[in-house]
Image (cartoon, rainbow, N blue to C red; front, side):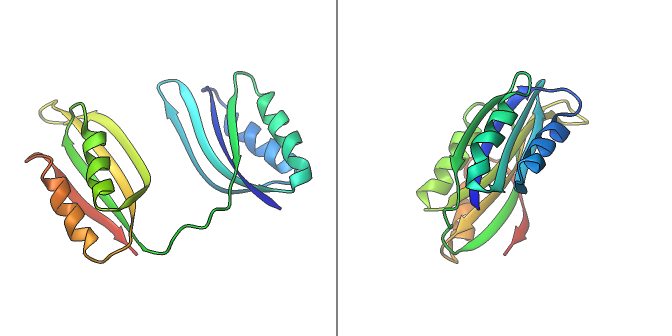
Length: 167
């Protein structure tokens, strides 16, 4: 069995997840992990699959026959380094460069961003544009959590951080 990571983009419509799941199942694949999103009329997915190597090319061909589908794939299976996982929620006034600032702070401390989900929204009472992100990071040193929190607060007085999980 091989592990493969696929990314998919297709104009959104009903039944896409079912079509993808049917193709995976038909080719003996196992759906291990995924992130699926509808963003501005586009369905986007990242899916980790396990499938017999002799069925892989047929599965890719079946997925590519879905109308409008753009697909990329890569062999997976790289084992991540040990460390503590930290998940944060961050809210700030929306402005250009926030993702760059957040990623620069994490990178400068040697912290890997493993998952990053963000969205734009308006504050309910004021209508102010807000940037909201959920960020999962891999820490390799106990002091990194405090260092990262300080670094993120240094981005601006408007930054609010909540620790969601630590394991």
